[in-house]
Amino acid sequence: MKAFFKTYGCRVNQYETEALREKLTKNRFAEVSDDFAEADLCVINTCTVTEEADQDALRLIRKISRRNPLARLVVTGCLASRSPEEIQNAAPQALIVGNKDKENIPALIGCGIAPAPSSISGFWGHSRAFIKIQDGCDMGCSFCIIPSIRPQLSSRPFEEFKSEIEGLLKNRCPEIVLCGVRLGRYLSRDLEGRRVDFVGLLERLIKLPGDFRIRLSSLEITDVTDRFISLMARSEGKIAASLHLPLQSGSDKTLKEMKRWYTTGFFRKRLDALREKIPHCAVFSDVMSGFPGENNADFEESLAFIREMKFAGLHPFRYSSRPGTEAEKRTDHLPEKTILARAQSLRSLDKELRTKLAAQAVGSVRRVVVEGRPGKPEGLCEDFLSVFLNQYPGPGFAQVRILSSSGPDAFAEVCSREDRSEVAAAA
Image (cartoon, rainbow, N blue to C red; front, top):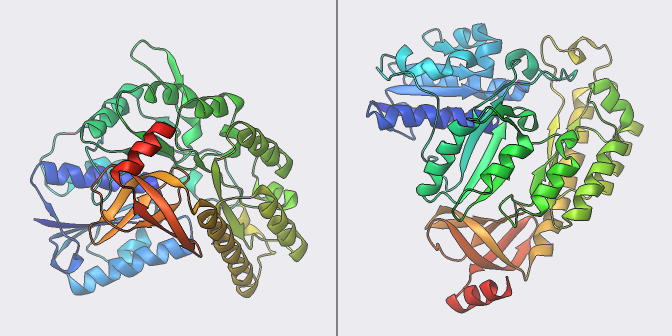
């Protein structure tokens, strides 16, 4: 059986798709196909954070129904949990599986795989591996649908994903990306019953043997505690000096109406504390445009604060009205034209910030995780700068010298053996 997989949305979704893919291929029920038109099974893992995410998934679902009507179509993820009827209208034959039943998909499609916790031994098409360790959010931001889709806070047992990571390291995976809906809310216990919180698990993971680094998916600014900063600073590069800290808005008025739980003053204070200990840490952020009631002064205040924070890059996105949220019920929604114009301003600022990050790297020697393929090799730096390489050095880590940049793009050459020795000696 040929199986096609498509994932929309966050890294948690990407991990869950990878775990399903591995279950089916390891047990020889399926081989992976990149073409849905020739597949016998199509699995679509959806996102519903924005209307755009909904529509992207529904377009593909309709396309599969038209072009490959004989394929078994399975639709799962957050849109499947929130609005199964929309999927049913787009593809009446689809098997719709909510997030709670994702792990049961093999059984639901007739593959006799014994129930077991999700785990992976690699990541299809990538050198790095995403590992889900936490799920759920209960914070109730006024614009966000996720607490109603994934409301239950849960954390995987430490020993469970520790052994998963050890397996990845044995398979020479150079970078582990820890993922969760609220990653910093991780809380579990070890085999001796001792409490393991987020910083505690990082303390344990960096002690694992092997040449690897840990990267963190999104954290909230309230997770950037002094204890966390201290651990990151003394990890000797085991924890990548790059963080994604969602801001959403640089206006205190808007943050309050979003029901975010911090102020710009608190955000600034924690970022200052981080940079005092780790000045080279690159910080990226999510920023929303067009939240209901956001006036021109609010938006300009937000832009000024973003510039003040000296982010390395942004993930700008437009406000999207989500059914059932507090923000949806407001009567002061902005015209789409205004939302789009502000989103474009944020995208321009993002390009400016990423251009600066690339330009500052020129002339430096970096240790990168090799991604891509022989015909199109790329490397990912510790600070999340992606560089195009002049040759494919093979999987794993490589030392590269960054030669030039053009806009947000950087170009590097793989170091010679002498350069590698020089870098090692300097370290």
